[in-house]
Image: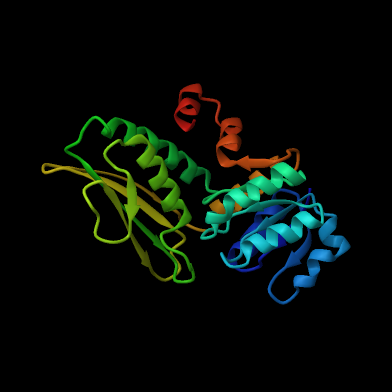
Length: 249
């Protein structure tokens, strides 16, 4: 498969390594110093472009890739208030787009555990949830896209929680704390606390390689698909256990 990289920071380099290890060819690398690369024949030859850049540039990157007929897999967070715009563009113009707040297979299993635990805790009002996420100092947005996805799932499953906040929470709000430290790839913890005990689930990434490998796996799938695509659809293909699939819905 031919892959174009949009963004060549630490994640872009990790994706390059993961893609080559799986036998793929990197045909184009676009970064801040060569935006003209979008119009190159090398970029247009890509089966999929994998994009990890910044919130302020992401949507423009998608549109430039779509204009060249290239499918996009993106992991950029902090821009998703414009997601309906991209979904509508895919529907009307036939573009193909896949986005996830986190490409780690382990994190996506963690998403399923969060949904399952939240559904259980809906019947135990003595417990109140909170969340903390920790990332490297280069991450611009907070809370992380992964934390927002986790919060959204928790809110859907828990009747007494109707919103998340980074400020002092109201009784019906989930507090999300964030820290930026060193080169931490990503840690997400969700706690349910009562007067007598605390239940906590945590996912801690050891390196960026898990995210990079997941992005390449997504690109392999997207290369054969069309339209606006989601991680839930991909995970349904990966996971064969039907009970877990029901939780992921």
